[in-house]
Length: 142
Image 1 (cartoon, rainbow, N blue to C red):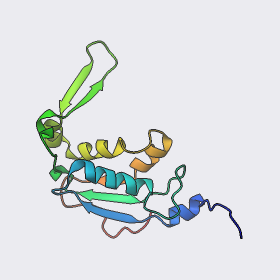
Image 2: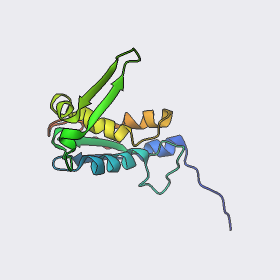
Image 3: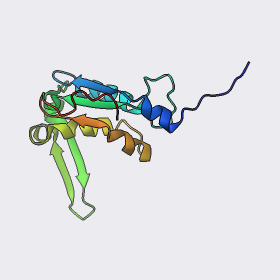
C-alpha cells in the first residue's frame, strides 16, 4: 500500500479553477467575506494545499448592499496612517459604503487571507461590483 502524499502541480490547479457568482444583497458583511476568502483560498477543494494557490475566481454583485449587524454602521471605522506626524486618518464605514462600497467588501476579504505573496495572488481573483451588472458573464475558467 502506497502512502505518498499527493501534491498538485500548478498546471493541474489552474486547469481546475472555477467561477463563483455571489449576490451580496442583504448578506452580513463578515459572513460573506469569510465565505469569499475560503473560495479564494481553495479550502473547499479536495486537493487543498496551504502553500499553493488552489482557489477559484469569485464575482460579487451588489457589494454596496451588504448588511452590518449591531451598531457597526455608526461605530466601525477604518484607520490608516501616512507615516508623518499627525498623519492619522479615521474613516467611518458609513462614509466608505457611500463613496466606495466595493472597498468595504474587498478590505474585509483581504484581511482574512494570508498576509504574504500568496494572499496577494488570491485577492486578485476577487471581482466585486457595486450594482447587479458585471462583465464576467459566461466565464468558466482563467
